[in-house]
Length: 356
Ligand code: CO
Ligand code: CO
Image 1 (cartoon, rainbow, N blue to C red):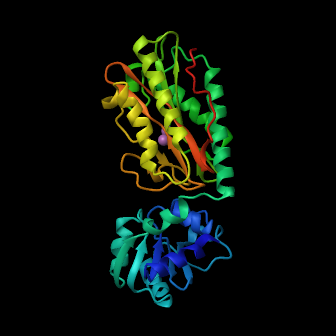
Image 2: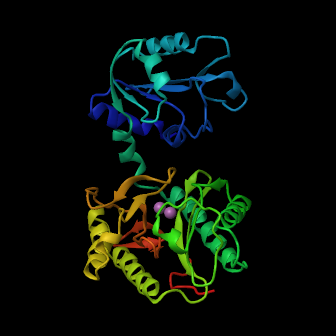
Image 3: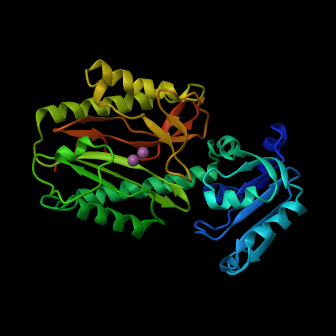
């Protein structure tokens, strides 16, 4: 179990314990499938000797085995039980790491149990999770294969006249047939809607002359993929074709810089400088990419402020885009792993403009 990997980090930085609520960190550390606990208090307590104990609602009684756990049932006060666990582990005070996404009502309840100095768990977890091992990379490759397959399916559809939201639903169905589900709500942005990087698919019908941006991802055994392709229906505006080439070249430039030892911001710079040099700088409005793993957005972030030094096994997206209000937009996104002295693409769908 990866939980023991926390210990050297906790000792080095003088932490007395950690309180971990459900989420991808809990899954990463324990492989327990407690993804959404809702409002019922669920906390894994760990001390710096590596002793640990879980408090969980009894709805998980049949799911958790071979794990030190105390169950509580509806009607009981779970905080009293948590206090006993913290006392047993000698972490009713001290420097305690807390899951960043812990619910505020739980944290307020826990504050009353002792005198703690809380710190965000992410400061240790980022060190553990940024570099993926061979098993994790295999799952990410699978997740990437699924989005490539779904892209092929989309190309075979009769898209003209389809509403954006209908295409988004079809993408979601194709994903659910092939994986654990979506890693985020699919984006379908057609025509002028393409100028909004996070457009929510709506009523607009796809028509001849549109560029259509498709951004979607899957979860495969917990690991995420995230792809964007922009396709053309019929013959789009010449300006949009020019923008497409700029984005494609920027994405390739950024990809070619990837290797161990450079900083995340160097990858961002390769895309950003190219787009600025050809005059579209002000239309590239977001960072170049984000880390990818159990979460669809995680470290390392590939932006102008990305100080993380890239190492083998780090996985992230490269997704420059150009968005021109009133006209439309283009984004091309691949998932990449740092592999030796270069990057390796996990997503392999065609990047040349496809005109249907
Ligand atoms: Co995306
Ligand atoms: Co992305």
